[in-house]
Length: 133
Image (cartoon, rainbow, N blue to C red; front, top):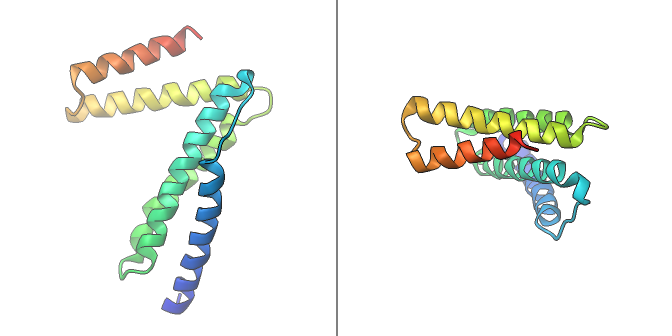
């Protein structure tokens, strides 16, 4: 893609991200029975916005191809949102998504040695809390 076309695409992406960012950071409310799915999808939207901002930043550089990891991360977040919002199972799916995320984070952090005993205790507490819901 020619540099001019890439710059134009980046400008459009920046506008879209700005509009979505305004909505996501505005006052949102969820019905009590939808709080888990609302919180999980909102968190995933914020993750997607952060990666979108990174895409805009690298798109005008000589190393624009590094944006592919951000696109993959956005796609994974979109898949999680799609899975969470399965009709009739939104809350259960949201809790499952949170638990799997905590388990993956815990296991990776233990494997690389970056998790303190205090952090591990917080994660274990969160997992126990999810198990009782």
